[in-house]
View 1: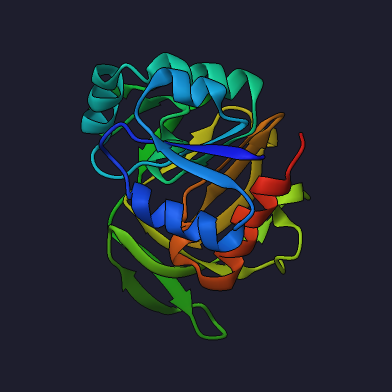
View 2: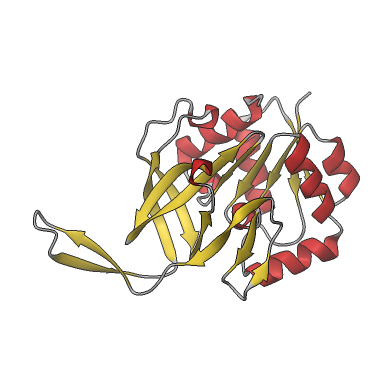
Length: 217
């Protein structure tokens, strides 16, 4: 059976992710895991996160799960969600915190205030609040197995003030716009990671989770 470990290091909506995965893949064995050996035994791993980066990295290190996550990132399908995506990069502007450095790049804050242009002339300006909260379109800039069955420019649900800026633009497979364009999905080899929340994104989010369960990179 396909065993999926959801990494529980104390900073994430693990139960919501588990419920969404179970709805998307009732045939899978889904476990919320707080022991390295359980993550090592799983066939694939979901790495969620929410909250301040300093707290996320501290609790990940204190939990004893850091090395298990790094091992998973090198040898099995891994899905990073929200801060779980951000933690894969080198460093965050939020507190100038070193992250896992699996991918070179920074986690940057939306420079405020953000504005969106409207009208044919683009002269009408709308003030956008930070954090970015709510539904937003995702442009699929590269084809990927996890986009299967999800129309380009579909809406997904976001809650964040920071976003990743990879050094290698080839990592970016999805972008969104909130005053500025930003990377909201990255992929390389066995890793796919996203800024938005599939578990809060209705049918498209469930489809993405199902695609992850079926993915064989």
